[in-house]
Structures are given as structure tokens and as C-alpha cells.
Length: 493
Image (cartoon, rainbow, N blue to C red; front, top):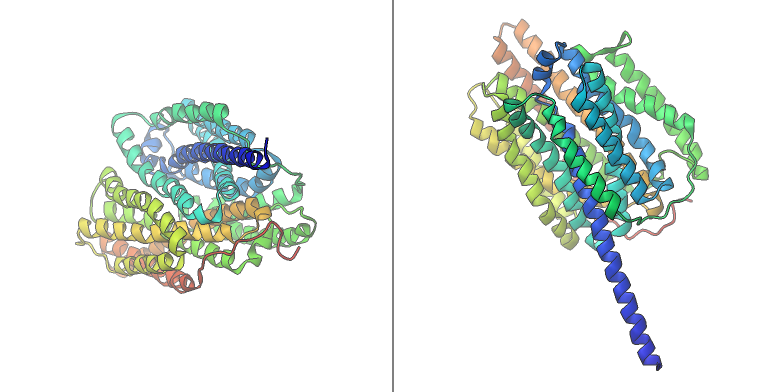
């Protein structure tokens, strides 16, 4: 064989290998996207079921609220550990682990005779859910080249936005015709199908490496993140404001103090690559800016999602199913726009997308400060759709810029940190909006306003606080840029 013939054969072999790798990578990411959609759908499917469960289980609102609170707490506690798991385990076994845990939790919920076992099932579900998102993010950042990440992050944004958006609507339809157990009975076969297909087709695409596990860091992170999320959630609800006799503000303070201890321990451990969460990710200014904007956006999104149903049902007088249907178009718009936004990111970078996105969200928040008892439902629907367009222009570019600014060696830490801060920021947004609404409503009632007018006043002030806070995101949007291509080395290491 001549040299030229040998070169042609080698080139053909390389091309076939690249094609095989591309097909393998697309299969792996597709399986992870589908499975993450299933577990994220479950995260919000319980939101409109609380009143029905109170009657079915003969339980108080504060007891049933644990179905949501326990889920959020578990997510906040488990996500920091996922960075360690993703480094130590290969793609296929960690996927099987996550989906198996989620499926077992769903089965427990479906057969639960009472509230206690149902809460336990939700905790088990949350463990599987907490593993999936960082696994998806880390795998995408590892397999997808920088020039194509925007498009892929757009697909991830579909999962993040559409699944939670349609959860309440699906829940409303199910509860209209069937008992609450069907919320889990219908999800279980979908989860099992994803597990079986994934176990058969999932490929190992990452290289596990030794990563030490500092048990004290795990304990500190559980107390810190759990305390912050529960404390913030408790501030927004008088019924869940105590645990073990401690008021919410004390729990929040304990979480904050332990968080300081946790951070100092990680700063010490990262010098020998032994941190549970490696804070060297924040040495990138772009990562820090993007994460701050994501936190503010998550506060705004969840705070708005909590307040709008309260406003539409208690002020405008439409029922839960109509409210779910009203919020559905916005979630679908976010999902439909996400791939296009991702492709635009690859072409023009984040700033031309993020700046108009933050301006749109800001305008809607300021408009919501003027809602009243006679505001048209159509105005709320249009406002929510515009808000969704703005958030669609924000989330995909920020996810891509944030993780793209992190060295490959720290991808697992960067995605785990992102997930943890999302949980804390979401809880903070709900706590802030609900607390401001509650305080202003009480003061307005004491001033002589009727119940509906007092509630409207509280909702307006809550949206005003959100609008003021979001101005920081508008300012930061001008500092977001396309991340440079980073090498595998850790900055400052």
C-alpha cells in the first residue's frame, strides 16, 4: 500500500470514528434530556394538588406543605454532593442510579396510604431529581464543542422551562377526573421506560477520576443549604415557620452561619483538590456575573409564579385549572424559543440576547406593580407571555456563558454550584414575594381596606420589590460576554 493510500485509509478511519462518537454523544444527551424532562415535570405537578390532598389525607395545610418543602430541602442538600458523584462514577451507572431512585420514590408515592410515607416518597424522588440536572449539564459541557453549546443549552432550557410550566396544568386535568395517586401512577411508567431504554442504550462518555469525599463538608452543606432553603421558605409562610420549636429566622441564621464555615472549609480543601464544591469556579468574573443574574432571574420567576395564581384566584376570581391554562402559553413560548435562542447565541454571543431579555422582564415587573381588582385576565396573560420571552432570552445564554467560563476540570463543580444557588435563590424569591405580600396585606387590612383590596395592595408591593431587585440584572447584562475557550487547568492552580 502506498503512502497516499495509507493516508486515505487513516483519514477514513478518523472520519468514521468521529461519526460514531457524534452519534453516541447525541444518543447520550438525548436520553439525559428526556429523563430530566420527566423528573422536572414531577417537581411542579404537586402545586395545585395541596387542597385536594388536605381533604383526602385529612391533614392540615402546614402538614401537606411538607410535600413541597421536603422536596426542595432534599434538592438543596443533595445537589452539592453531585459534583463528587459525577467525578467518581461513569455516565451510565450514575444515570441508572438517578432514574432508579426517582422511580422507587414515585412508586412509594403512588402506593402511600398516608401523608408520612408520601412525604418520604417525595424525598426519595428529590434525590434522583437532584442528580439528573448536574449530570446533564456536566455531560453537555464535556461532549459539546464551544461553538455548538448555545444550541444544546437551548434544548436544556426546554426541559427547565416547559416541564415545570406544564406540570400544574397536567395536575389540574388529572385531579379534575381522577384521585391524587394518579399524579404518580401516570409518571411511573414513563420513568421506568426512560430507565430501561437508558440502561440499554446509555454509553459511558466521561472518564471517572479519584475524588475524595470530605464527610464534614457533606454535613456542613446539608445544614447550610437546608437551613437557608427551609428558613427562607418559612419566612414566606407562617404555617411552616417553625421546625423543632425554632422560628424560621433562627433556622435561616443557623444556615447562614454554617454556610460561612462551609465556604472556609472548601477554600482550605480546594488547595489539595478535595473540596466538595470548588469555589475556584468564582475566579472567573463571567461565571460570577452569570450566576448572579441566574439567581436574580430564578427569584423573579418563582416569586412571580407563586403570586400570579394567588392574584388570579383570590382577586380576579378564576379557578385553579383556568389559572394553570393561563400560565401554560408562557411556558410553551419559553420552550419554543429556547432552541432558536441557543442558535443565536452560537452566532452572535450572549449580550445582544441578554440585554433585551432583561429589559422585557423588567418592564413586565413594573407593569405588574399596577395590577388592580378590575385588571383584565387578558392583560395578565399577555404580560406573562412577554415575561416568558424575556426569560427565554436570558436563561440559555447565561447557562452557556457561566459553564463555558469554567475549566473542564471544574465542570462538575460549576454545574453543582449552579444547581445549589438556583434552589436557594428560588426559595429566597418565594419567601421575599410572599412575606412582602403578607405584611402589606395585614397593614392594609388594619388600615380599613377590605380583604380583596388589601391583598391587591400586598401583591403590588411584592412585585415592586421584585422590579427593584431585577434592575441589578439589567445592569449586569451589559457585562456578559462570550466565554473564552478555557483549557483543562484550574485557574490559580
